[in-house]
Image 1: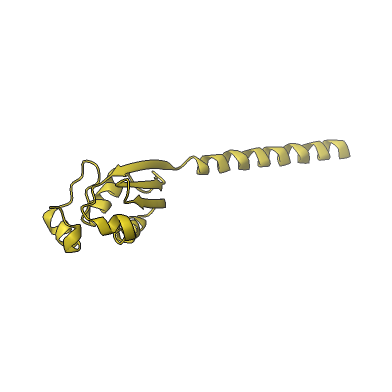
Image 2: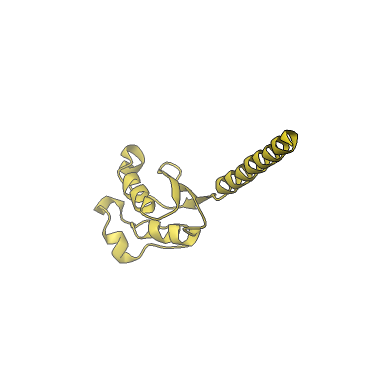
Length: 122
């Protein structure tokens, strides 16, 4: 009788551990990475990265963002996100709202007007 109880407990324990591992694996796979191409029109953004924080903070306002890094020298923005909460399209729209183009999403004249004069398109 004791062997049967111990065997049942062992099976339940192994099943629970296996289920937990599978569930944990699912959560880790819920991320995507995109690289957004933008255009920077001033020299100081490349040197001091003054606009970097503006763009990154705006993207972090979206739910599901895990990591944002704007690289002014390469004119790219790398974003890691959870697609259950936000789409690549929404991220690009958020970048454009700061006054910078994001791939095919172009910033409007009003959004660009919010940038420092030296950062606006020429």
